[in-house]
Image (cartoon, rainbow, N blue to C red; front, top):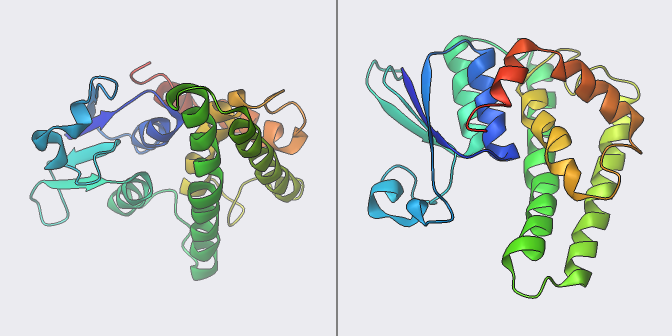
Length: 207
């Protein structure tokens, strides 16, 4: 059994979908971020970064429980545990790593900036919101151009790179004007992934 601590956001949905895709038994617990549950000593003992998602796998690599935090680390851990959604070739694994990095290091922070300046920072600083929205659109343009010639993000197969990117397209994109409407290739890719039963289940977890 895997214990999941998460929230109903794009970042959480990445792990929710992965758990469903891997057909692993798990129980999900919502973390009250607004109430500060992530700042307690008990929570920080699970994740010193005080963030979700987190998983605790009772059957870790050595047969003992293991706690894994940070989304990419969780996706890679579950992929290694099940032997799924990672290319067998070294070249394919490099492609996966590149797209994991691009989405997590470049695209994710842009949407986080939009959310912070739209909802958390007092006064809604419009120039900051517009800056992050503009940069997010540029990042989507890069992704859209790539998907014009590719069915999936890496190695011509469905991998954790797609699982990591899909919730950004399905959920985060709603925070920019017209959403995915201008990006026909992203929409085609996202629509194909959305048809997967495991994705449909994962996107509803904690919702």
